[in-house]
Length: 236
Image (cartoon, rainbow, N blue to C red; front, side):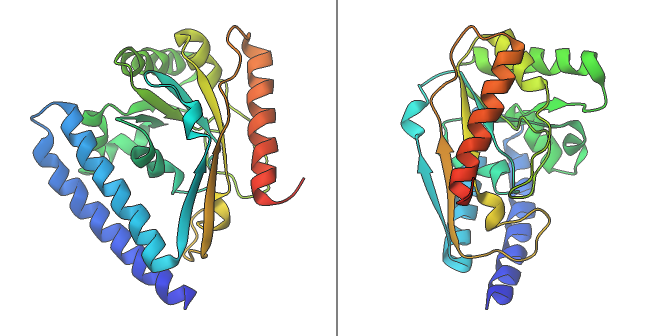
């Protein structure tokens, strides 16, 4: 039954996403806020399909910690689910994503027009400066920005090095940074066909203290995210 439900969901996910990207092209001549509203509708649709077809529910705690306005959401990244759930949870957010995603047909143009912040992971310091510059544009508009500090998806229980881009972004902008933990990989694994029924939990922690320098900031961010993720996964 899990196999059949997963097959149906995966087929619908790919089909609706492809059609959504094509339809969203109609919004390109208009202000980006309209395309972001359309993408938000798509994200809510995916979350609904995941619950109805696969029996995967979403539970979010700590959303009240995020103050209105500019903010950086530094989230654990275990699943493709993480790449769209914030579109439904927050008002007009954008993601920091790898540059090659903007080269995808249709979707790349939609993401670029919506304000996605691209980063070239092989570009070194110049790419990091460009990312910070582009991110400040989003934050100056008073909107939240989602970034995955690990820079890639990690399997449940796996620890991968946190990348310095999040520190450059937070220290360069001065806006509050909220660590986020999740167990999404338990139910929607990395490149996994099967979608396992249960509850995807997202835990939003209070903002990190302002004024931290780079090393203490990175240490605090990683420690809080990993500790909370371990609690969500049910282990030390």
